[in-house]
Amino acid sequence: MYKGRVEFTASMWWTIAFLITFTIGGMTGVMLAIPAANFVLHNSLFVIAHFHNVIIGGAVFGYFAGFTYWFPKATGFKLNERLGKLSCALWTIGFFVAFMPVYILGFNGMTRRLNVADNPEWAPLLWTAAFGVAIIAAGIAVQFWQVFVSIRDRKENMDTTGDPWDGRTLEWATSSPPPFYNFATLPKIEDRDQHYYCKENGTAYQKPERYKRIHMPKNTWAGVVISAFALVFGFAFVWHIWWLVIASTIGMIGSWIAYSFQRSKDYFVEVSEVEAIEGEHLAAVERDKKNVQKPEQDDDSSRDDDLKPAGATA
Image (cartoon, rainbow, N blue to C red; front, side, top):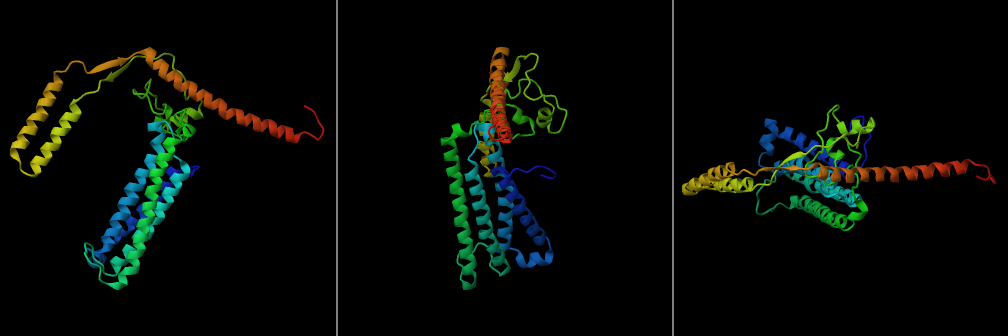
């Protein structure tokens, strides 16, 4: 963001909410690191508010920012921007309405894990926090509605070029969703933000001199089966079920050995298939460029007409 031209898309809203919320959570964590303060605040609701300040601000809002930003890369269409911003606003406002009173309750001596709150002085703050939770719930409901509306109206928000945000990094050089082989040719890195560098220098979306066959691994059962045995192994080890530990260990090793004897593990994507996939993407990019240039030309011509004196003919 520093020295950049910030565009306040829904993903940027989530990012700013993350920065503000996580910063406050970090500062309250520093307070808990002070022995004198921690002596008073330990096991109080202040700790609960700090924890959620860090987790929601540092993790959840960051997840939502990434989900919104990379959603079109995974699906081929963007999420509804207006509903995304509304959800972010409800989440952020609701969070502060819900958890700022919890900090105060911690200062006032309310401990965590109470089954009864019998101090009437706590009631207004607890009701305020409950109201904040209701605002967060509304934000969650808007998120579900956002996904539904985006899927319903996906044809209006299609990502035809693979670069809906005018991105800087290489994932935006591929189509959306990206082809199963990712890149048809290995990108040559000349700058930290290579895709932006290519766009600035006019080398983006250029067809290479020739394509080559792409070596790809086949799908395999081994990862899923070995991880399932590993899950059973971990459960059995925690609870000291030794016969199950032995059985799951045999299953893991046996699966690995069985997979090692499997010969057909890879294949090649032929040049004709690569050319067809990449040609479709490059054609979509060219169509988008023409659609962008046409309105600009129309605007220029209209401005020229405005400059003509009254009664003049073309």
